[in-house]
Amino acid sequence: MDDRRYRAENRVHWDELAAHHPETDHYDVDGFLDGASTIRSLERTELDVCDRRLLHLQCHFGLDTISWVRDEGAAHATGVDFSPTAIETARELREAVGLSVEQVRFVESDVYDVGDVIDEQFDVVVTTYGTIYWLPDLAPWAAAIADRLAPGGTFYIADGHPLAGMFHHESTAADLRFTYPYFNEEAITEEIDGSYAGWDFGLEQQRSHGFAHGLGEIVTALVEAGLRIEFLHEHPWSFFQRFDAMVEDEPGRWVLPDVPYELPLTFSLKATRN
Ligand SMILES: C[S@@+](CC[C@H](N)C(=O)[O-])C[C@H]1O[C@@H](n2cnc3c(N)ncnc32)[C@H](O)[C@@H]1O
Image (cartoon, rainbow, N blue to C red; front, top):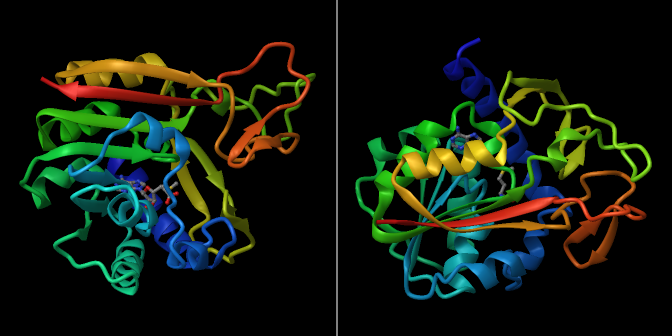
């Protein structure tokens, strides 16, 4: 199967998930509508969006995109996702919270093609939590980011650490079960009726394709696209319950108990366009 076919199937899969996710406790849309920001303390601490124009890639149904403007001080945000259902819901939520299209806009596009539908450049390009796993190749992704960044602009990503992505969800400290690749060797094709946000949705398109990307591949793709890496941080907690045995150490931070040494479970990276 070629890259285009992988992404076409993923798009149908994600479009179905986008119809179910707003109803889940995971997303707590009511809390968001009541004013709770969905931005986590990690990116709030590491990324300054104040008065800056922001491009949010793989925005899903827009909670973070809207939060960056409503709650975190960004001047404007553009959210991009290839799921039409996600984009439609995002636009409805934008209206529900009373923001205008001059403040937040949503554009349906594959992340690889973002330069075809958006020609402006941004102070910040951001993508967080569950994004590059869905992309077969990071070179066109990094090129699209560099292309949309204004000179001196900032790119920021926070996501699951690729090492943590290697283990089965039933792993424990005593039994880390190697299940998935670290390097991008082949597509990880799975049939799952659900996601991190819930199960048994009754999805018609249960098959999806993910891609492992090691830290070296991520950094090199960005450097080759012309970005300068400011930092690459590795964190010993996960932003979701990746393994069944994990416990929530503090709100939104999950750890595996009884490990002799801490595992890298999340990474964050900031880079600048020269
Ligand atoms: C795990 S979700 C991101 C979740 C987001 N951090 C949140 O919590 O709302 C992944 C998103 O990537 C989108 N996506 C996957 N592959 C894509 C692609 N090639 N181009 C654009 N969007 C894509 C999906 O539609 C989905 O909305």
